[in-house]
Length: 231
Image (cartoon, rainbow, N blue to C red; front, top):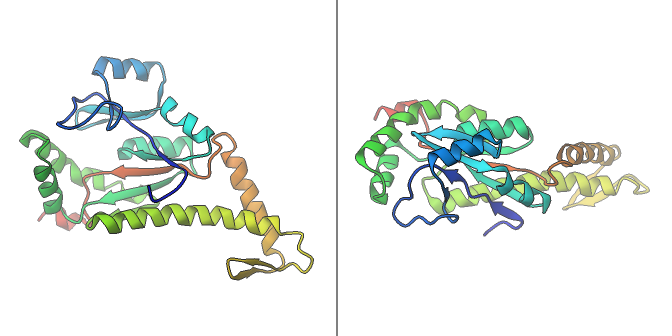
């Protein structure tokens, strides 16, 4: 809600709904055989087996949004994020961590939606999952929710400004003296052409998807350091 022109893709899952979860609002809840049929038919943009259940994003949940010129937010596992980056290398990914293992366990217990077996399974998987943090463009520690939201919002803004600056500067390449104003700064001779070329290259890379960036948010059971996992 704090960023315009962003749509959240609703994932599919083969697990049963938790208390309070609604179909097509939190997930598209389907059976495991139905999920596997969709896999066989190539209907998924990405998918993965997570904690014993399938989770994935259907292509028809993403492509129509991209064609509208929206940035699409995927809340997915690291395995699915890797698949998205293979399809769209310019996608930006954000790795979200809890502040500590103790905080993670407390949050799961306070949620009151997982069995002891599920909590134990997810905590045991935290170390292996954390080993993939280096694959991501950004890391956000969700210790204070409002601050974490601000940081993710800043990532959106930074990515858009990077592209928009190139377009604005490039559009002024014909300026007579080679200098144009840009948000209180100056683009000096040669800079306009440089930014224009970068913007053109980015636009070409995105022609198929009709969007500035696909941002991936991966929510995972992570810690800031391996040492904390032992505490």
